[in-house]
Image 1 (tube, rainbow, N blue to C red):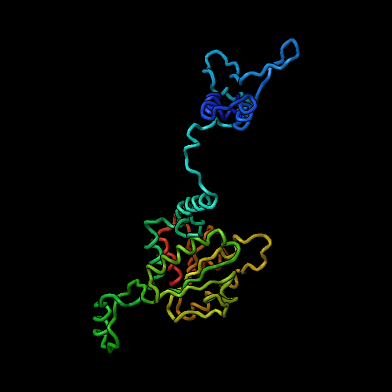
Image 2: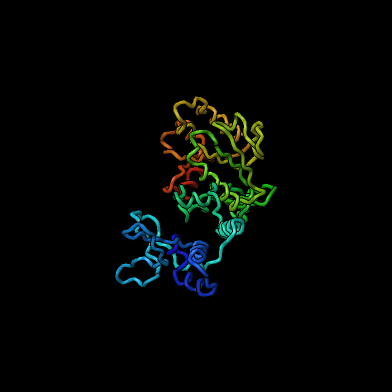
Length: 323
């Protein structure tokens, strides 16, 4: 029988039948050529008895001449051989690399997370109630100007007193036609409210308009300078009559190591500067208004940046500082 279990005994018999060897030496040579080993048997007298190759003994249930089963190994981690593996086409290494690259290219690439203000606002509720936000922002940006209907009572009184009518008197009306100057504090204490400031600035842009809104950034106090287009410059008040809104914590939320927080006197100086130009100062404060200096509360409109704030409260504070 063949040692490598590749040629059966029937192959040797057919070979002998086809070639018809003349002697045993020729038969032995043919058997060795196709992989069979010629076995000899020694008799009791010491003489060798030459026998033809015979099939080895088989176990019960096995067919004669069938290759013996492969020995069972103790390793269980290897999968059993696939009987159809020999029928599968073989792939070259280069082709396999191309297939793997094509498979990776077909996978959709996930975009890295970005600092999206709208996405951040969806995680935390806005500081103003959504239903009141536009009304509150419009109220903060409004000025009371004599642009309403004709004040007939005042006009008749002027004429009855025989005084000249220099201009037609009109009733006052709240309007945003003056625009607004928006000051956004970038001090360390306002770091938790950066996304809220961005959303608030967008809301001011929608309510007031792009041309009527002047947005400036500052640190601790606008009088120390503002940032415009990435460059720092001196603060310039708006045109007379334009309201000013400062979104700041007035240094109340600054960390202990921050020694540049603005004193109440700096904000009082800003309020006096604006009042001399007929402009009002409204401060949006993410802290309770009771924590603010009493003198500053009397000269400015301190609006708590909180969900409890309403447009009616904002209008009441603005009328108080206007006298």
